[in-house]
Amino acid sequence: MYAENEVQHVVLDGALMTSRDTAHAHLKQQFDFPDYYGNNLDALWDLLSTWSDPLIIRLIHSEALYQSLGAYGVQLISVFTDAIQENSKIRFEISHESDFFENVML
Image (cartoon, rainbow, N blue to C red; front, side):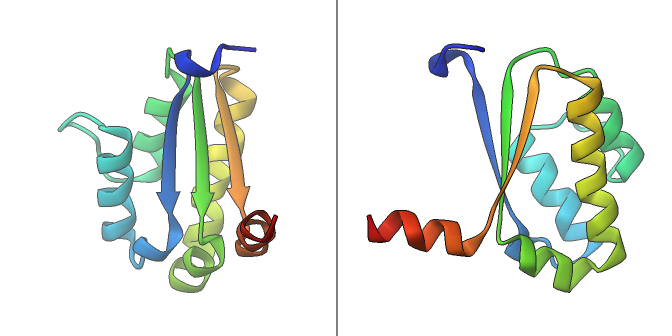
């Protein structure tokens, strides 16, 4: 595994991804994707599958993402889960709201 200071962390907020357009705008901002990012799932796959540095992606408010995007939200998550199979430098986590509240209560 990598030392914590060598790992880039990206937090994605499902509550901010209310449409395909806002989802890709959020992804572009959080990942600092280049201007040529195509704002679609294929472009996301292309960038993630070739990512060269250690990366942890954490999705929060996943329930909101599924409510807003439906099947497209499922496809979006599939891109991340496929990317971790292809690229060993990437880790993907889904944080459920109940996990957050349990940690706050400790």
